Image (cartoon, rainbow, N blue to C red; front, side, top):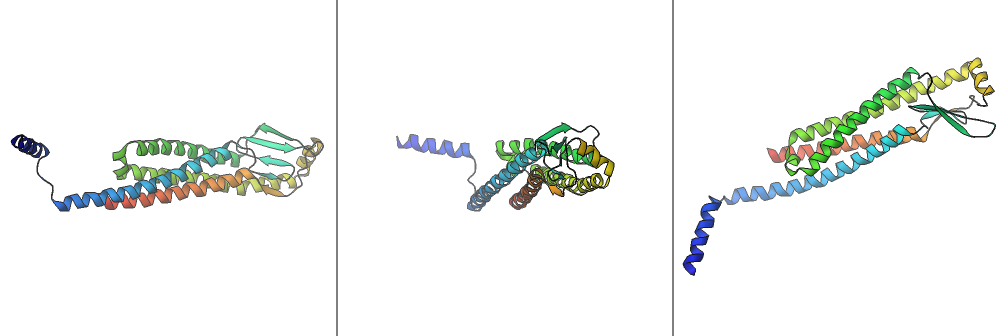
Length: 226
């Protein structure tokens, strides 16, 4: 019986190959410990990215970006007007989309596509373990996340600056003011920034924060790989 156990032990030794030096085993344990930290940072990056994406989609589809208080509300896809007679808001698609709205639409559509590609890569990164040690995947995530945040930020700049100029031009044109007044809309109020605009600002900041977390994880993975 003892010889049989010795024979089995020898067979396991032959199948397993040479015994690894203690130094290599210690390096593997350290690497696994670092990768556990990376997984935690990846979870933070994932959470911030999903939050930024959700807030961007909310702002993308809503109608309260900028406008004239108690008069007009401008968004990417619709313009809304409030009647001073009954106090109700009425929203319609743009008949003639202003150039600055088209520019903001372009930035947001590119941002949406960038978000979509980032989400696909992120799901693959989380689902396939060996991809978590691949520097190329992390570089792609960093670049795409940064691009998505910047696209949203540029759309905000265009809507904020040019939207204010658009509303000021309406108030300066007496004929346009009278046309709106005949429809029951007061366009002489102050310029305002709506909740959709604020949500988009937060989405941009959170997405750029996700980019920062991706960079931290990339640096740590790069250190492990070296």
